[in-house]
Amino acid sequence: MKISAARQSVLECSADAVVIAIRSDQRLSPAAEQVDHALGGLIQRLLDDDDFSAAHATTCLLYPSAGLAADCVVLVGIEASPGDQAARISREAAGAAAKLLAGRQRSCVAFFGSFPDPAAAVCGAMAGCTGQDLFRRDKKLFPFSELQFADCTPDQLAHGQALGEAVNWTRALVNAPPADMYPGSFVDQVQQVLAGLPIQTEVWDAERLATKRCRAILAVGRGSARPPQLLMLHYRGAAKDAPVLGLVGKGVTFDSGGLSLKPSEGMLDMKCDMAGAATVVGAMQAIAQLKLPVNVSAYCGLVENMVSGDSYKLGDVIHTRAGITVEVHNTDAEGRLVLADTLDVAKSQGVSHLIDLATLTGACMVALGRSVSGVFTNQQTWCDELLASATVAGDWAWQLPMFSLYDELISSPVADIKNVGDGRWGGAITAAKFLERFVGDLPWVHVDIAGPSFSDRSCKWLDGGASGCFVPTLVALTQRYSTR
Image (cartoon, rainbow, N blue to C red; front, side, top):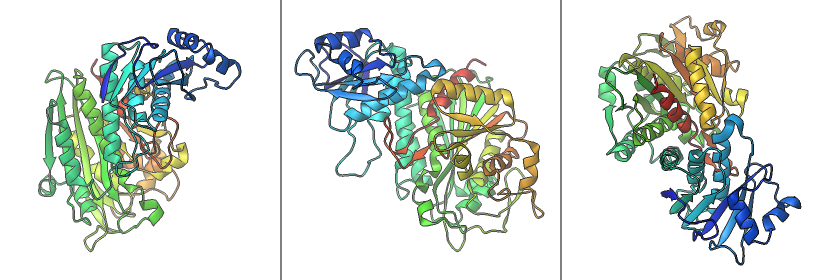
């Protein structure tokens, strides 16, 4: 998709459609005033008669008979006082307009009016016109060939495009069917897409995982005909002695639950259980494209959790790479086992700070709903940086407690710990407490993206399926990290 600055005025713009942002306080921007005048005061009448409220992400499609070069006009409401939510509001408003227009084939769409975060608006428009209908003969959404933006600097355009491409690639990885997306094909696609970027790739196959004592990853992947892999990506944009940010992603490309088999309705969307890994590689693409002056390493533990005569079993004791033994009480609590070895590898390679992202628990969705990620930490100052970055980037996140009283809930009489807590209670927290055992004293934040990473319903600004959430947050956090 070509992203460029608007080359013509709003009235002369020859795009297939123009989008005009209308503030929720109904004060018209210069572009909106020009269009309103050309249409004989139509916009103002719509506002005065409450036929268009200009509430956040509301849209109104107009087909003017004269006065504009474009075929149609979309009015989109945008919050007049966004506060610290400028990125989210801009992304959602631009996405709503793009999604409306993408219902039919259009080559070029131009955006006018004041978006409080222009880069986020570019990202939102790119995501809004791109659907999950990868295999439908009759498409529901048709991505545009070109997007134009007025009042957007070259740096904002470049940043927005990098974010949009990364978000859409993350969505495509998660939306791919599990027959096509498994550990080996995930690695192949990542290597293909990132070729040409300054990123060094390293892959540990099953044999190397055994040599490196990654027994938890191997245990989870044992039931699948497709062997597990550990993918590592290294970007070095700063001095050799600068600190290294470690990003870790859970990459369970399909989760049947193993011998603790999920019901059919609980298994249907389990292709999304690799969203953590997809988010991490998407962020790495954007970081490299933007040439951020920072050192970052990414680690993706990739497995299928399947059922066979060789599946790992309830009651098994796994000797993890870190030397911590784990009693298996539920084979459907496999993501934390994969992350245990993956976190230890990241730690052993000398990263200075850690972030892991995972579709880890349904309990987090019970606590926070479908739209908000749960955040857990062993160091508050590092967590504060992550939460500040999420606010700037427009991702919803909320911190949950990590009190020591939860440690007892994962204790085992047989091994050092067990892989589940006390039934339903505090499940998202006990999962985080499990992971905490494998990071030592490193500043670490765990982000449970089980809710917002995938939705079976569409919204105004985004098609259903994968969302690409937290890619913008990781990029924003990396920008903050570069100032250390």
